[in-house]
Image (cartoon, helix red, strand yellow):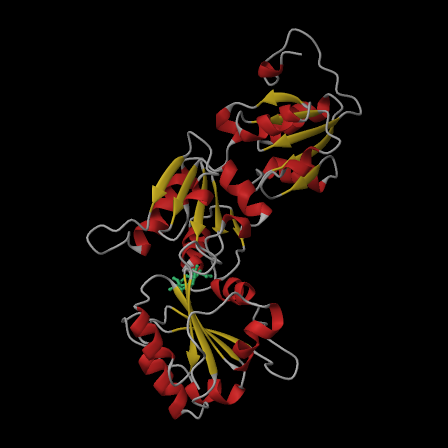
Length: 359
Ligand SMILES: C[S@@+](CC[C@H](N)C(=O)[O-])C[C@H]1O[C@@H](n2cnc3c(N)ncnc32)[C@H](O)[C@@H]1O
């Protein structure tokens, strides 16, 4: 079959009666062509045109408004898509491929992908698929080389965390760049540390993409608090010990410690996971002590959790700020505070901690 010219006028009739056909992207004309030849059609398209939506509403095809995943090829005989990773996936499974003209095949879109705490083993399957499919990947400075190695050759890499003087690219400029690439018909992956929606400014990026009507998918990632706790064998909630988990930032928009409701946090008796806390830790600890939290509440600071240079500083609420300052932690550091921190060794035999727990 001359698959490359599937959508060109052909000198013969192509019969697809009863054949399961997958159309990835494309428009109503492509869908209609395949339907008229008798295909049992499944369309994958995060931003289908009105005609394709109408065909789906009439029950003439099955439509999924999302990105392609390899499992879509299960049981498929012919896959019609733009040349690229989808073709490769189909060919690898022995599925016949047909090429869509690039212009009709690609609707630009964006995927906000959580890359987890750094260890590539903690990426989700969906994150890996999105990274491999991307035409453009815009990534932060905390994204490690193993994760970046998943980007396909030929895709554009943009390091938006790269320091220029002391400043990374401004958030407004990042928002604009994602939209521009997507509007040019590309699949843009915005690769972010941890989870995009936990202190990651993913919300602002999503707002800007929504305003520009760019189809956007969000792939969650393992946030630093979860990864750090798992690493140490600390259950973030524990029957009888901690009934709540509070993710708080210690870094306000003006570079100061934000004013949380310290009394409520101290009274809740749950686990506190403090992001971006190294610089303001002395003040944060003082606020919690003033609010009534016990000075001997166990605490631990973990720098570069899950990465090669991981460092752990255990202590108590009263002593953790001095321990962190003495150790000179300056990489990404997560501080856990709460009774559950004392369970680190007992629960899972966490690797030796550098300091003795202070009394
Ligand atoms: C701008 S916030 C981004 C948080 C991210 N979106 C998440 O869900 O983990 C950066 C902060 O996350 C924490 N963090 C991220 N990765 C970390 C890691 N590997 N080890 C320890 N803390 C980490 C640190 O508190 C760091 O200052």
